[in-house]
Image (tube, rainbow, N blue to C red; front, side):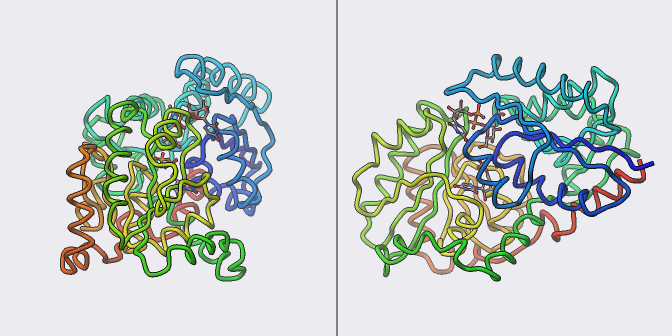
Length: 372
Ligand code: UD1
Ligand code: UDP
């Protein structure tokens, strides 16, 4: 009998990293695939569902403006629990370290339904960096029956926590599957990523710096410092910054107040995935505190300066494409200018590596679900 798999996700990065798995499950007669989206993100989730052609079977629509972690967690846990009672799947699949992923695993555990954790084993070693993600992924790790670690480093971290080695598998990260998929779609139909043309024309002759920022632990002082750094970098007349601003009000208020009106800073709405792939393509370098961007940039050979104090993705640093610069404005400015002004420093970072996978992770995970 076909196994029923319930894939649960709710935010933009989970959707990007799970649509390749949903596509693969849907094309495999060994499974009945069901999708539950929590709607932890609304607009940014829907952008991905639309591009990837994923039609959820359940949509909990939990997002509220400026949601608190505890109220969000309560809505997620009860909502996902009801879906599990209705569906009774053989496996629940969750991804990464969001509140949705943690509640999906917990609701499954409460019903003794097996949990597969995609992107298992990432650890910074510090429970407040990133916050609350480091704790979320550790909680999921204690309950999962299948740990799909993207890299050997992640698998080692799980073994170091005495997770049963037979349940740990190095699968690569499905973000590389997603990147290959979207790159192929753009090749077929370039117009799906054509919306940045106005900025490309306006900023012709300047080097483009792509920016994203949203980490909760950076709210307040950290966000102010990042905004201050961008303002100082924008004082150079040879650069332009394209910054799709996360919809979290704690990010938007600071960035609007500090950066609106600067000629060479495009504060724009979140980009859909094809357009963000285009931004990665045209950018000279990326400034980010995102997890996913730290994985995509090395695959594309794009230098990425990580505006965080620690990272759970040391592979990009080891490969030489990523560098931790923290949230001190002077350091961010200095490291950015070093890359802009020192061709050797730039060339040393601008080399493509694939520490996070080869684009076949979804198939590996699906085969593990079939065997488990
Ligand atoms: C969440 C995840 C984080 C992940 C990030 C990816 C948790 C605790 N945090 O953080 O791990 O890295 O997503 O982006 O799970 N909002 C909208 N529309 C949207 C999305 C967000 O308006 O499409 C606004 C809402 O006011 C919402 C707020 O942003 O309340 C915060 O969203 P939330 O998912 O709680 O936190 P993120 O900071 O996005
Ligand atoms: N991304 C996107 N549009 C944007 C910014 C990011 O599609 O405007 C994609 C990016 O390519 C990556 C993912 O969103 O795959 C990262 O999401 P985010 O930074 O919100 O979360 P994190 O990865 O830090 O959890």
